[in-house]
Amino acid sequence: MTAMPKHKTFRDKKYVASFKMPGEHKCLLTGAPMPDGAHIRYGFYGARMKPPDYFIVPIAHELHTLQHNIGEVRFWREWWWRVPDNYAPETSFSDAALMGIIKDKARAYYNQWSER
Image (cartoon, rainbow, N blue to C red):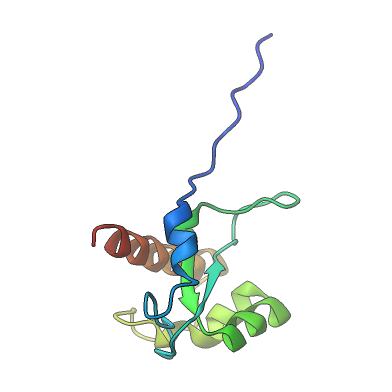
């Protein structure tokens, strides 16, 4: 029996490092400068598993701390309507549907950043 090849998670060191560069990003929710890079972890199970780097969004440090304190899904339920060009505020989305929207926004943000 052959071992399954280990799945490699997408990493972009330049993108991750760019969150420490002044003026490179603004908070997706408030427009504040020098945001943290917050991983969207929903759906990535396992101890110490980090999602791909294209699932990082810029959010203000205070909001990133709040995200960790109250939980990712609750945070995005309360804040997602502030994301630019989002869908109409709708609270009846399932957790999976809501987090799918947030992941789509994160991927689009990464793609826009990487094409500059």
